[in-house]
Image (tube, rainbow, N blue to C red):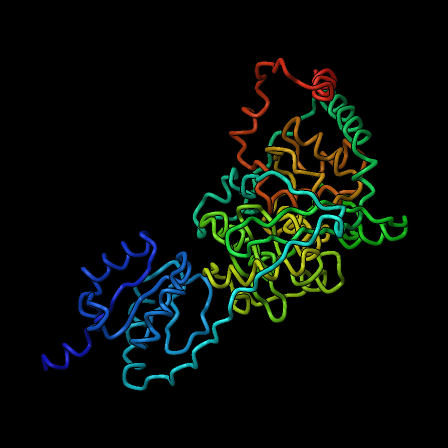
Length: 469
């Protein structure tokens, strides 16, 4: 009988695992899981445990397993397709670990056939294209990662939802003087930048290839604005912001608003990937069917195998997606080298990361709202979105200017600016995906506290200050 009990104890070896998950495993092994697991050396272990979301963990596991070939429990946010493995979704639970132990015992009795080793692809040496072949390209200075200053991206994955809100009807701001001043500010902002941004419907990006595929940063492309007809602009704006009519009865807004569930679309997986690349500061790969994306944190860029202004990308964003069909993981050294070769060969497939997420969110929502949003709740813009980098639509500058001055709900913004509500809804959605919306009522007041003037303010800033008062 004792011999049977000993057989049930699984000897495991912990490979590369994040400190947080390692602490959870050790605590479980010392308590409730003591009759299921026992930590052992690599040679004596029955199985391995590895965290595929930990930097370079997958690559090191492949090297070790090529020799020892033992069943492995893989910790990861998304399911792995490796043979002879058992996937444990994060966050870890006692039941999941217990079930995994039984599955590993099954693999020990009936091991899966060993997968053929993957061919080693030598790094491709790229040669920088002379500057004269791409006169439009220029290199930008390094910027902070997208969302790195956003509280939404610093929270744990299980706690993060920039859209979730408590439905509380706030006190409506009726200060008409502030509204008037903010409208003037918006008009000034719009007039200063409309020649290069407000009429933009699509853009094409080009990049100068990197001479070194492994470590060198990917240069950022300068935007080239093609000549677009008014008809094409209108068509593009309809795709981004939809064609929904205004809510006629604010008191019964829930009956008129069209809601959607982002968890049913690719945008939620893209948001998870953005969070992962921001937290790990590693390149992340997202794969769904034939579509492939890379998120590059050090230069805040995204590679997309599909042009973001194409009908294919629009269809991908608007079509329901099973989250389990989307594969996301941190790229190992070999994958990064190959990715940089791809980036050098396909510079027009590289986009600003903010613009990529912004456009994906607009196409997904098309003027609709997240099912948990309360349009009566006052919110505020934490900071201006970089409107010179993202794809704009009508009234975007006026909306940003008014929402930066004080807390308003979405209906108030549309009413004060006398614009269709769908543009306000779209702006709100796009800013949410970048973590630019302040939802906490307690913080809204503090945003408007006067600050000491900056003696080095530019002419444009001084004009804004004079208009706002």
